[in-house]
Picture 1 (cartoon, rainbow, N blue to C red):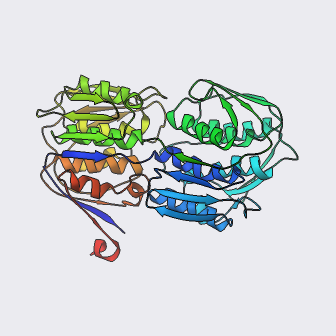
Picture 2 (cartoon, rainbow, N blue to C red):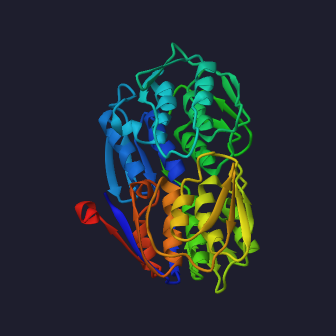
Picture 3 (cartoon, one colour):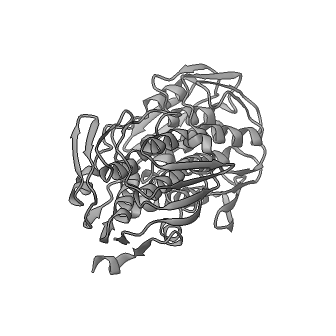
Length: 423
């Protein structure tokens, strides 16, 4: 098993360049099979999730060519069917986007039931509801989801909850359906807008992405395009919180500040200086932050993906703060690991009450999921001494070269691989 070894207690200082948005990339890569010509995806984060999706595309006979670490050329012409039934697909959540993309191009697909982080119930009922409304039949047998339709016809689909995954999957299935599809109560996250921009660049007719009503006029053919993925707001928010936790000063480059308004507002409330300038945000503080109350909400509210990193900052802030988790009920698994480092936290239902301590203590801890791992890195950076974080495969799923970027900011962090980590 790999692990991070962090010698904490150093203020983060310098500049960090934010990579492409993981949550957009993992939808756009499956969506590429809808194209009938070559697509070039730029600003692609080099993380294990995108590498897995590229391997799945290659297994379907797509021609995958890396032009550099963050640019890939995809030629889907040789793809004859959409099947992703093996362990690769079952190991990540985003594999379910092959269902919508396969339906859109071939009117059928088979995909292993999606995995990903265990952060609570993540049903796919709204995806199924959308596929069936478009005319598809859905079967789940022996861990495989099969979708098939003679033809896809546009429909009006009201989502019971504003599901990001269902919104995107229905978009993918509907772009070649006959007539108009309307998604009501659609999710509004920035990566939905980015996926819609990609589809429109291929020749689709998607309007309203970023609002709660998305309208899609079906087209017969989609071409190719070049598309640059938007910056990762969650990666940016993680570095913002890390800068505050270490009482440092970090210039975060290649961001869209509007996507980070809820995070910036909460950090300012905690006496952190946040300065926006074009596509950059500077975060700095020399004093201990003060506590605050955080409630996770769908966009544009405070993102659930930054709840766990924020809990590490609250754990060392002055006073008592709280986090109310309104999206996933299983997103407090990192709390016991923070307690091992001396955090004072009690969880009551969906609320974590956090009594700030002056400093945490180094310990051997485990990352239970992607954002829990980010929280532990922030906790380790904030305290003097050596902390070891195991199960870092979760972290590598979503953060592009995180140890290199932190090292450039002055952090002492090392990724120890394989047997060396077990000794």
